[in-house]
Image (tube, rainbow, N blue to C red; front, side):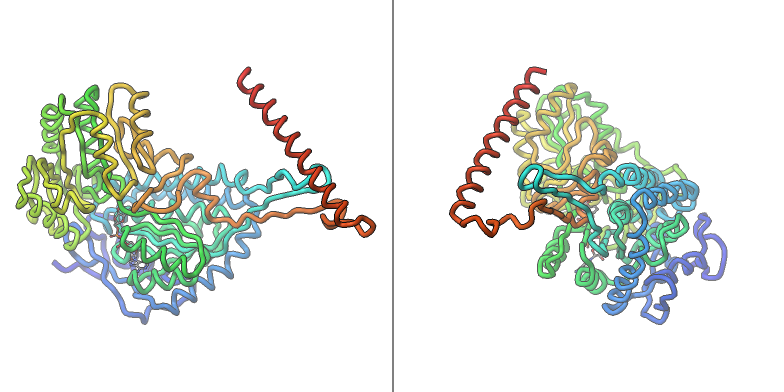
Length: 542
Ligand code: NAD
């Protein structure tokens, strides 16, 4: 079925091809004509129909975009942090004002269920408000202890790094473009963003709203095209790169950033474990597992792909989990009727199907799911629960990134912790128990950037004041919280001396000065130690 390219709403949304073409024309920045570049069709995953084209930029286009962003950013940097914060607050309000059209656009380019579009939608205004609130204090100059008391003065200031490159994936294009961009903007940087070629339109629309909120034109620019061409050119042109995607590509990008001696943050893949303790509420844990495994059809970096359940409750948990999963409905409508949407494309569908087939051939039991659903759309796959998955099968060895989970019994909590830690990844984990304190205790023993107790991922992701990121193959660096902003600044130290150079004055022999300076630093260390001990005693007593 061909889609009308002339006028009229697309698939029951308010969006028309004309409007998407308008967004595509924003690629590369203002007044930048890239319309003569080769074009790539973007499709609506639920039907496989083409919805609009985007230009495939080359290296020179990306370099030009970074130059434009750098030039435009000087006006942006000159604003006070409080003024930049006010613009981020306006942006948050504009996003809220345009909620329904934005939800439609997220669904149109990802094929996800509306409730999952909502999850990523709410993150953006919350992040904008968070950094607007915290940014001015985090960016304020600080006084630090100097080399010598009274005689010296030491200040630290936080300059923007320059232009930040944001490379984002297709699974959460709305919040993964903004969650790293907004703190970079707050810090006074220019930003050039490269969304995945399958999902470029939400980023373009959000940049349009940023301009409407008051960010000067070209401070934020979207570049589109092939990852190895456009992404790689971006890493070579910017002053900092933040990448979200697979660990495989992350290694390439981090290596390139290292060669260029620029800093980077890498938010990469996961094989996230869920550990269910014997005192867990089984119905609550089963509902949590459904959310943890099948949100966005499992195409969520934080989702659970391995569940370890203490023996005593294994059968009961499995039964409840299968029953909850079988209640889910698949669909792609622009309303809240479907619980689970489409996979993004044929390649993702084949990956998921291959993982399940491989597990089946090696002896796994499929308790529910395990089938493609072409009757609903070309890329739908049923939520699938496996047991008896052999250790050498694909879903045991690799991230599936789809609606597939394996469930295993373990004979103790310690065995569950050991199994959870038996992975090269460490992005997110989840612990289920009737005793929250015990849950926190178990969480401490799991090697992961985030561990959620009695929730799969939302309670960790939505804690915007707390850092989030991965250990091991799951990444480098952290987003969210003060850490998410401080990565985008160059701390600069300014130190001065009231008595001129810290060296021997003209009439003082070097040997006398050396003895004097050694004695005074010794004395200073003793005084500092005494003060430290006194304050420890005071804290213990109070
Ligand atoms: P991907 O690595 O294939 O692509 C991610 C981005 O990198 C895309 O924009 C792509 O165009 C670009 N890219 C590809 N090759 C490049 C290169 N050589 N240089 C620079 N950029 C390049 O990942 P994907 O398939 O789009 O996303 C799925 C993966 O992302 C999964 O592994 C998932 O776990 C991970 N992910 C992680 C997080 C997180 O926060 N940790 C969030 C979402 C997704």
